[in-house]
Length: 210
Image (cartoon, rainbow, N blue to C red):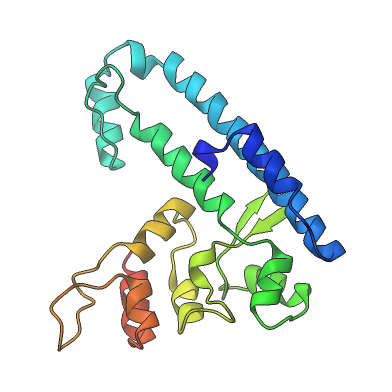
């Protein structure tokens, strides 16, 4: 995970035995990516410690606005983690565990990388991606060892375009009371629903309601 990554971890990973030139490039790119994400988290931690929220109480107007956004505005206790910072950490972890365009192309059966980019930029897209600078990162939850999760393309296409990446990942991984099988009362996550043969159409309906 990015949030516990230290210089030794990155160094040891970078100098593990490597195979092809493409594998070497991917490994080095991943290490540099993790270093950058870890540095960003350190900067965010310092900024959070100096933020007005950590030092001054919120006004009634500020509190109302933040609550409307679904954020916890309760005063922080000494040593308590700031949920805003936790959100940044979840985003960094999501990026760290995502695939490059090259890796996604391999998962899809060694298709051309341009095909992956086409699916990312289609309207609507059929693969979910996060643009980081000039690079695309594709969250790994939408992939199987070979190919994509059953029906994921239809569901990704139905997601609201303004839904943030952490929200997308959370929606796919949280049990939904509307996704229950007749022989099991346990609510399934959208990913579990799709992976166990559930109808993509049902998940599409729920995605459109977000």
